[in-house]
Length: 112
Image: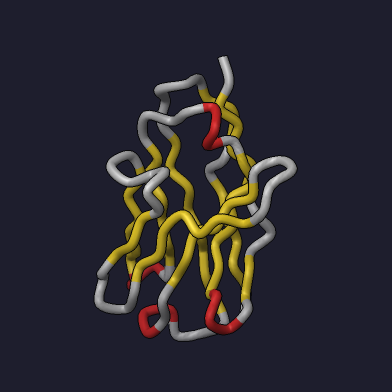
C-alpha cells in the first residue's frame, strides 16, 4: 500500500490550496479515505473523510471551507481548502485509517 500526498505549501490567510493523495496497492474505490492533520505541538485531528459511496464528513473547524473528493478512476483523493486561516497550519496526511495506512504528509503553512 502506498499513499503519496502533494499540493502543500505556503499560502497567505484567505488563500486556497488543493491537496492530492495518490493511492496504490489496494482497491481504492472500496475504502473510506481520510485527511488527518497535526498542527505544531498538537495532536492529530481528523479533518475530513469520504466513504466509498461519496458521503462526507468535516470537522467543525473546516466545515464550509474545505471540500473532500475522490476520483476512483484515478485512485486519487483530494482536499480543496479555501479561505485558509493561520490555524490551518499543519502537516496533512492522507490515510486509510481502518487499515492503519498513512502517507508521509504534506506541509501546509498559512502565514502573511
